[in-house]
Amino acid sequence: MKQFATDSKYDRYVLLDRDGVINVERGDYTMTIDEWQWADGAFAGIQTLTKAGFGVIVITNQACIHKGRQSHEGLDTLHRFMIDEVSAQGGDIVAVYYCPHWTPDNCSCRKPKPGLLIEAAQDYGIELAETYFIGDAARDVEAGKLAGARTILLAGTKASENAGEIDADKITNSLAEAVEFVIAKG
View 1 (cartoon, rainbow, N blue to C red):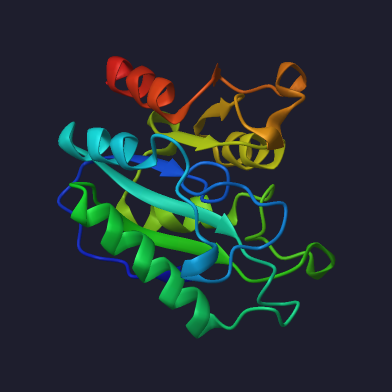
View 2: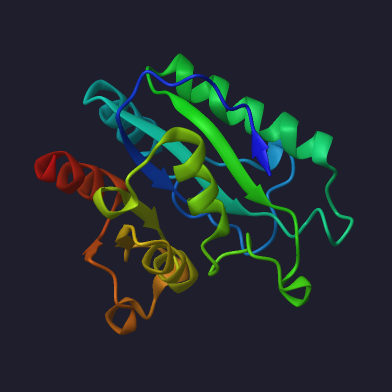
């Protein structure tokens, strides 16, 4: 599902996972603004991408909806907060794509399947082979690979303790390091 999609002025994009990249991975669902905790470097990373001319699109699994723990409206509120706070810090999130399903649903949009990345690429004319997807888990890397995107794994996160076993194109210790790499690659 797509949220808050705007007309884009960008011709280059970076796709970001949400939990563990933009906000701290809690081990449980982040469902309210009070539970939201910004990941180290999230504002600076997104701001740097924006200033360098990259549109940022968030790709996230949110099975909390299928499980009845969160409503679509509640998730809208949380994501509007995320977008507004990033904007206030000089960054720009162009759109959020989320999968509300649970693994047994076997949908095409739940990472590690590539459906959301492909949908974003179609909506924004993104050449995935030239685009990075930054995530903190094996499922993010797998989804990126299946979509034909380049992948960066944030190894400094709790969710990626087995980073050496994951076939990412690049492994970094932070979003700041990942952003620096993306900008250097152009």
